[in-house]
Image (cartoon, rainbow, N blue to C red; front, side, top):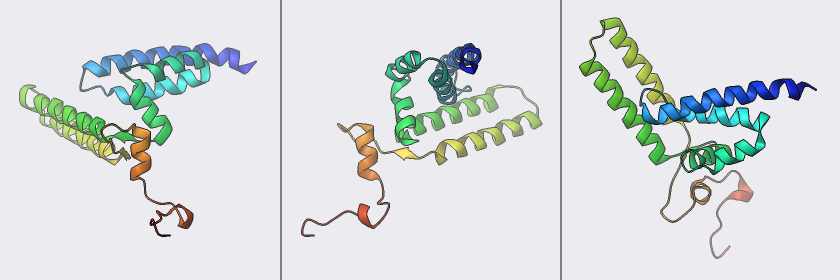
Length: 153
């Protein structure tokens, strides 16, 4: 059965990606979120039980659930990611002794990263409202039957 061969591969990849995600939590130059998403994708294919634990975790669970349910991230997450990246790049440019081509590459890669972060769809977090409800309350109507109705209609 093909699943028996691929399961250990997916589990191994999930382990590698999870370690990189943990490292990314502490190192601003290594983003945690993509590695959490890769971990999740591998666990869905290899271990639903471990995937459930990842979704339930306090550290990665909320962001992972937002992405899986809405394909979006909370505004606070985007701002923290952008500011952290800009601080790390600024510190690198200010304190590291790199050549001009390396500095240019750093700025270009940071600009690409910032572009990607800011283009992600956003879930508006509302105090006291779960992100899924906040996303529903801020979404635009999709068609005539989905348009908001006035109280008198």
